Length: 346
Image (tube, rainbow, N blue to C red; front, side, top):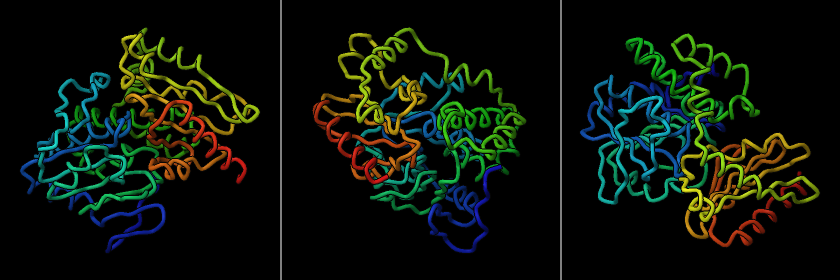
């Protein structure tokens, strides 16, 4: 199993984790008093934050807490293999909830317009596995521990007792969700965060009913022809810089429009290039709106979390992201300069 959080009698703030004592009891106490509950995650949601939200919604339902997953309008059909009964709603500025639970994010800067959703709530809870970044969310209750491979894995740790007390079908559902969050954040067990603890947790999830071969197929291999074309044309944009140490690639809005493909439905294109030999860093630029780019950074040698934080982003030491405005040429030049400086310091 994952490393256990220390026993404690007061709130911990120590390097890589913060944890409120008796977290599950305190959370369920907040849930029992809340007339309205929202679950949300970071902008450009992924298979960790969003799928963990689906798992938590199921757990809260069994605990008597009715909740909505608040999104930016992304299509959740890609997760229909888990459930077609996800209760979700698109964010609007007039929303007001008694309790908002934020997953896979600890910074206001990574919430986008949903900052208002969180700030206007009566109570806030943060559950995350990233290092604490700038503009931290002010929470009534928090569990932040970067030892965990995914926020789904952290959820399983925090609520394992309650999960195992559910009926077998509900246990399997949550185990499926947690397994998918691990597939997402390990890049199908290909990233450096794949440890013995991760495999031990996956063993427990399989014992709970998760079927790895089916989840792998449904989450990672279920790609439309349009998505494969989108990936292929993105790969055709590869540029190598700094004598082959840096790899850039990009996907712009024109490409998505030509293919009739929604980029939000694509897995990260970076997973297709992480095996290129000789690389120090990868930067993938995806255009969200005209001249607004999401940049995904990957490196086994550099601390890209620190680099992303300099641009208002965040994530993990070896895999992080940020959002930046400007023409493709300008933003690539800016990221190139930052990566070159990081290489020189390493």
